[in-house]
Each structure stands twice: as C-alpha cells, then as structure tokens.
Image (cartoon, rainbow, N blue to C red; front, side, top):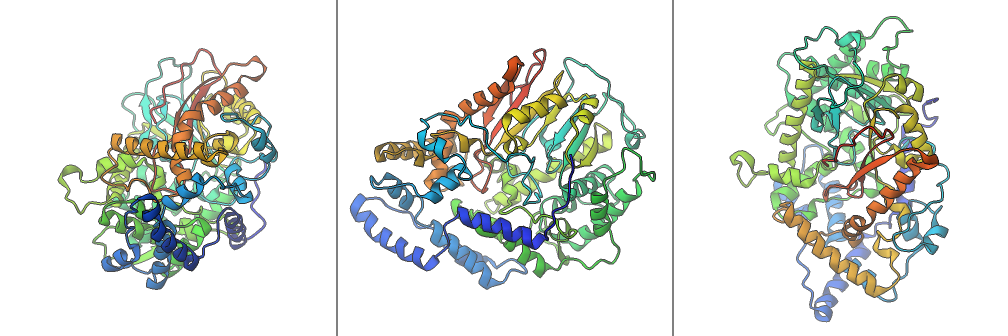
Length: 598
C-alpha cells in the first residue's frame, strides 16, 4: 500500500469538503425560514389542534450566562439564532410535509438518502427491506480522506480483548477502545505474546499483557496517540488528568497543558531507535508532525484563531443540538461547547488559553478537522444521563460536566493499564500489509468503519488474509442504510404509510427515552427532522437484513463466517453515529464470537 500526502493545501481540502456538504444541505435563508415558521404556527393550531411547545431562545440564554471567552458575541448570536429558526417548528413542519399526499421526493433527497447518485436505478426498483447487491464502484480507500478525526464519531465499542494476545486496530482514531474494553483471559489460548523491547522493562506481576497494534493513514492521529500513551504510561510529576483530557478532546488548552504536550513530543522522539532500518522506527510523516509540535519557543495558535478555525471546520453541517435538551443549564453548557470545542478546561482556571496544535497546527497539506465533531458522539446519552447528579451533585450539574467526569475516569483506566503493563501499544502510519498483520497472529482485530470504504467482497478478502485462524473481528458500518430500502420515511410513496411510520416512530422514541432514563433531559419529540427519529425505528426493523448480507459476502465460495451484531446506541446530541451497526465476526468455525455488549 502506498500512502501519499495530498497535493493540495489544508485550506483547499476544507473548501472541497464544504462544497460537498453544501450539496447535501438546503442553503440557509433565515429570514425566509422565519417567515415560513410564523405562517406555520398561525395555521397549525386552528387546523389540527396541535400545540407546538415554545422553543428556547438559545441566544438569550447564552447571553445571560455570558458568551465563552474569545467568541465574538455577534457570531455566537448568528449561530444560535440560525439554530432557533431552523429547529423551533421541528418536527411538526416536516411531519406535515411527509404526511401530505402531494409530497414528492426531490433529486437532493435521493442524493442525501443514497450517499450519492450511483444507486438511484436500484432504489427506484427495489422493494421494502431489499439490500442493494450491486457492487458500489470506486470504493477503494479505508477512510474519509477529507477529514482528520480527533476522536470517533460513534460511541466507543465495548470489545473483548484477551490477555497475552495481540489486538490489531485498522483505521483507529484514538485509544478510546482501551477505556471500555473487557480485558479477559483467553478460554482457548493459541499463542504466546512476547513483549516489544521498549516495554520489556515494565515489571509484570500477573498475566501477560494485551499488545495493541494500531494502523492509521493519519499521521496526526498516530503522533497524537503516541504522545497521549506516553503521558499516561509515564505521567510527569504533578500532572493532571484534565491535561490529557484537553489534549485528547479539546480545541483549546491551558498553557500548562501545551507545555506538557510539547515536552511529551520531544520525549517520544528521544525514545525512537537510532537505526533507520529498525522495525519500530516511526514513519517520516509522523516524525515530521512530532518535530513541529515539539519545537521549543514555537508560537502557539492564538485563542482567537482557534475560535475562528473551530467554527470554520464545522462547515455547512453545523448547528446546535442544545435545543434538544429540556434543562436550561444543559442547553447553555452544550451551546458553549458547540461554539468553542472547549472540553476538560478547569472551571476555575485562570490559565492563558491557546489553540490545540493537534487540530490547528499541522504540516501543510494535512486534512482539516472533521466537520461537526462533538465529544458527545463518543458515548451513549444514557451513560451520560446516569452520571448527571451522581454522588450527591446538585441541580447545577450538566451533561457536559458529567461527560468530562466519565472521560476522566476512563482516561485514568487506560493510564493504569499502561503503568501496570497490562497493555502495550505500537502505532503505525499507513495501511497494513495483510502479510505483516498475519505474522502478528492477531487474536482480535478491529476495523472501525473501514468496511464502508470498500466493496464487501474485497473487504472480507482483506480481513481473511489478516486474521482467518483463531481471530475475532470487530467493526461497524455507518453507511449500511444507504443500500437498504425501507429505513427512511421518504422510501414510502403512500402518504398513509408515511404518517403511520411517523406516529409509530414518536411512540417508539418516547418508550426508548423512558427506558433509558432520558425523558428528564430531552424534549419529546426532538426538534429534528422526523427522518432522523423515524430512521431509529425503521433501522431496528431492517438492520438484520444488512447483517445477513454482510455475512453472506463473508461466506462466498463456501468459506465460514459467523456474524453477530447490535444496532446503534442513542446519541441525540451528536450529528453522527445513531445509524451505526456494530459487528463481531470470525472466519474460524472453532472460535466462539462473544456477544456484543454495545
């Protein structure tokens, strides 16, 4: 596999990505939207007797609280007012539209629904529940080349890793899987893992470690994860877990964090073998990133520049999810996060704030940060809600502070693994050579959503070459819904069908929110396009058809393939992730695939 740096600048890549996102979105016309909303509200109650609950004035709430440091009040008000006008009549306006007998799907609807226009012919002929079996042309990569991900855009999967074995993670975005994995003894040990030289000095009392081997085509991801792992394994005197939380998730850092990170970069570089032919020597691209970040007296990214770039990278998809929340303190806290990307900053900090070099100070040609990133993509909201108000905290606790506490505990868990030698880590830049991976004899492999970027037949061929005997594979798909007919309300041509689905979706959402303890925190129905809420209901009915299709592709030619799957966790405060299907599978008939705990 040959990995080359893009030949265009970061700014050009950002412009291209935003152009693609603009094609998927209706252009914003706030004045026009405001007029339509007023007309709708004036006619809805008399005609249908529906009472639309008032949507919170987000701009007024944040203004009363105080705009975040470094955020111009004017731009914050524009952002929050756009959200207000875009969402205050949802889902009611779109529910009326989809329930109207004269509603017709537009070309833009098809393009967004199918992630392009290559499957329109199949879509127009397909029956409900049918999976598109025609290979999708042009799927050759293993990642989204337009974006650098600071963290995953789906909840961390809870995977089972076995002590004394090797786990290979293809397309990893961070080390978060180590914070939620089940570390267990292998019931059917097949190999003995010998630790790498750099970890041999770690005293071990107890079972041998898991060796985590990660591959990523993002030099930034590899470099950042190397520094995070080094800091967690060798915590400097006086270090704070909040500092690592900032490095990992935040768009701005305290000045002390920036110093700690730069020193960590220099220490990682100092540990590199001197000989060029050493197998553990890092790739030139990764070394280049670390040298840039570790420069002494390098001018930091200013707070103002970080604020501008944060909002710029959100592109056409940006909008606040804070209006989905019932409690004022939650709305204000989430809106402030969405305006800034600040996370893990101490509430009482007096420190000077600087921009994250991981997001905003990279070599020329580096892909820009992913559009619309939110730390709330990494966890199911039910887990966050369970943390709110825990340990005697009062009503002033928020979903943002609760998620910070959750992640601090999980970061500490990884640090304990590192310091006790229960996990060792090797991180590689580029795509893996199947022969090299096979030599590692992986007991488990994770593929992130690599399978979304390859034809499934080609993907299974690659996965089998890497780990066929004794190996359990994990992965997830976010694009599976684009090739299954019937999981989007616009797939149904009859207005009566659409109305029935929308009514059932509302009832289903309320039931799920109640079961997961979310009703005290979420508006119901959510102020979103009902396509989103109805998809959760419909995907639950049809995702197993795609899972079966995935398994059949793995069995092509009479080969063995056992697959287990679960549907996505609820992440209503995230722009991504709720449509994911989590998979675990094996090509070895003697291996028992663990039940997914997601």
